[in-house]
Length: 66
Figure 1 (spheres, one colour):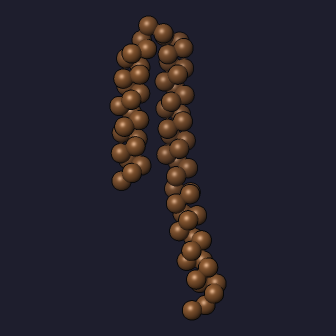
Figure 2 (figure 1 turned 90 degrees about the horizontal axis):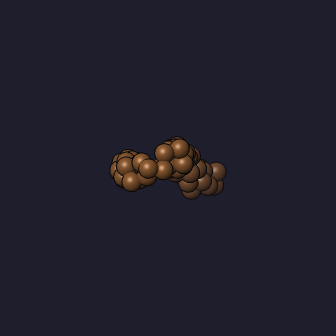
Figure 3 (figure 1 turned 60 degrees about the vertical axis):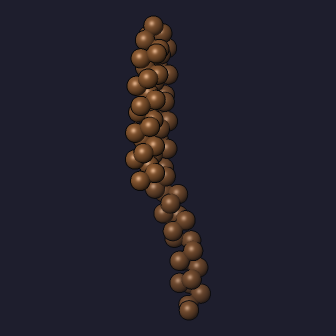
């Protein structure tokens, strides 16, 4: 087998996985940041915001793992 093809067959899938994980990582960070900002703005709504944030993280994780 051509060494270039065998090398590419090892490197390309790894790069694809890394690139595919960027979007969900940004989404998770944005969601967490917005939850923190909401708690800072309205401390009395902390439990409600945390509950919604937890459900959102679960949905994001389910989407990432499938």
